[in-house]
Amino acid sequence: MQRRQLFERLQNEHEFDVVILGGGVNGACLYDTLCRYGYKVLLVDKDDFASGTSQSSGMMIWGGLLYLRNLDFSSIFKLSFDRDKIIQQKANWMAPEMIRYLPSAGIGRSKWWVQSGLWLYWLMGLGRRRSPRSENNFSELKLIKPGLTNGSLTYEEGFLNHSDARFVYRWIAPHRVSGQMALNHCILSGAFSATDKRWHLDVEDGIAGGRYQIRSKMIVNCAGVWTDQVNAKFGITSPFRHVFSKGVYLGIPRTEQHRSSLVFDLGEHDDVITYVPWGPISLWGPTETAVQDISEGLAASRQDVDYLLEHYARRFRNPISRRDIVSVRCGIRPLVVDSHYRENRYPLDLSRRQEVIQDLDQPWISCYGGKMTGCTRMASKALMLIKTSIAATAENFTANDTWESDLEQMEFPGLSQQVSSAAWCAQHELCCTLEDYLRRRTNIAQWIPRGGFGKDDSNTQTLKNIALELAHGNSILAAQLFETYRKKIMGDKEQPRMSMHRS
Image (cartoon, rainbow, N blue to C red; front, side, top):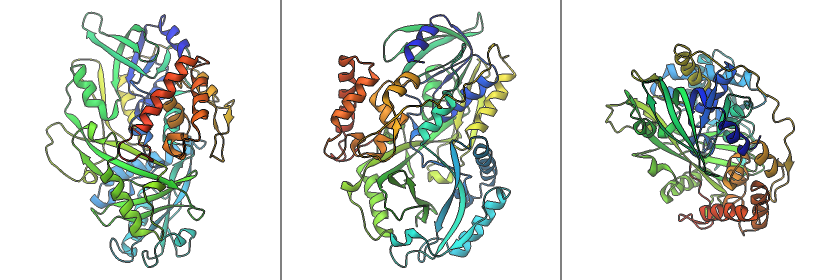
């Protein structure tokens, strides 16, 4: 169904049980949950789905191993359970894969200490994953500096089979029946009416223009790092708030020897740094940098890149330079603290807890924190609060779980594997802009330098053709789409030959 058709439906469908603000992983998973429970639901995102933190992960569904450092056993138990549950339920979206922890021969934790921690981690996951083991010979040794590591220890986590953005959209896509609708690139405003106990809301289409009036019994704020801003806009107070940590990954060309994910001791803050194979690139990172506000974390800085290049050079035989970087992933982690929190702690020292709280005066729920792994737990918490206040009113509970079965694919210059076609994404996946398509419906912008343009702008005409597909043949609109994306990619001030992506 095209986006235009959804807005035509919105002209007649004015009443919803729940409106969800934010189409990241938590909003998307809650949308899926409420739809399957028979609620009339509208999900609205001011940008594209998964255009915030949810598009900048390490592609891992993990149980929280690193939280052993501050004995956060509660988070580990919960995340390990959530990891194994979601791997079982969504086996076609992800798969368990082996990770290789490389104990340092010099700095960092001893091999015995790491091995003990991995066994404890496995036991806390109730032995549902493959048990840890020691391996001294592996292909990646040819990449690592001699004498740097003391063998390797393997354990198992879950990895997404496509991308984190695709993972988010897969929660949304099956639900297109009457009373269930997800809209991207929309701005929502309005207020609660004490007279009819409804939220009276205006939905503004940020692409084609137009305003639509709706009403809803409940609003759930799943805006991620923008949760506090959205609450303030609607006059909602909360006992919690977010503090922020910026995480940056470098995408670099993947070598033949890089077959498994590597974890190195960072040598700082008891932290680690990872080297993850993903299609034709390897992800190196992430950083963990406290930022005071969202604007500080929307792009990687020169210091972020220098930091990662330096740590790479310490560990690998062949260092890399800026010219080798294919892409940069930059995301902001929303970390939950009490509203009166004023400390300045290293972000990893803060608990990765979730908080879901309902306002005492108005039908409004706020979701704080959360991780890719724990999205189903967050949705369950919100569902329990909603069920105590609102009965489901949708007549059709059907979900089209086979919506990807007729997906069209195409070739893209420089990639050995096919990608979803632009025409199909425009027709079936609410794909409006070049960034929607190149960054989130496909991995082109992450796997091809300069956001898909290529090192020498060799793909310029290909991107113009894709823009025409997204514009349904409208050449004027296609030119606008292309120029907007070109300015975004070429406007990177950090390094002319490197693409930066807003998270």
